[in-house]
Image (cartoon, rainbow, N blue to C red; front, side):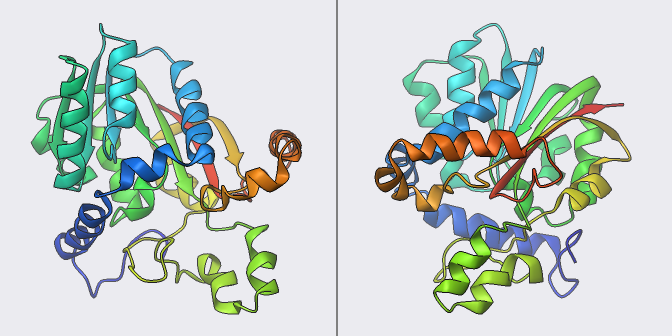
Length: 275
């Protein structure tokens, strides 16, 4: 169930639903991000990990409005960056941001992971990064991993982040509110995004899911969990209440990353190397 979506829906119709969701989400996406300190901190951490590895030709899957390709493109003008997103509206926003900075080293394409060989024919990337939840919305995770292998240069690096299947600190919070179905929807596979109003085809992923999909063609170099105790992005309002205690929770996350409970938070980050 966590490797592939239901056979009742084909890949084309599935991706149309995902694209429609993000097309609608594009209207105020940038504003909501700018107002969210947790999202900003997580993105900074993801970028820091990515910068530790040498690369010249990078691909971002699920680029959204271009926060990262614009940032990387500005920071590394001698490197090439390619953005891919299933949503035409998100790509339109990204192009505007890139044009605003007059970047010549950033390229755009609309499509899913499976479309990469078509939209970027002949390209091989030595860095592929996927931040936040783009891998949670692929149709077939194992096929997506194989597609990424096919467009990877020798010894390419993959920096992948996913929304976790097991988010243990969230369960008691929902149970305390009497929302039993909400408490276990990730574990049961009934999670369809963060909104109770608009559903997105998706599923949360465990470390086992990632290993099963990527472990046969890539070697794992790093792993790290985020928002285990530190508030998730949709609970950013808690930072004002927590104040200095928030940093204690961040440090607690760093400490628990050295234990078997490292991936029990909102997000997990994995670094893989192509064999």
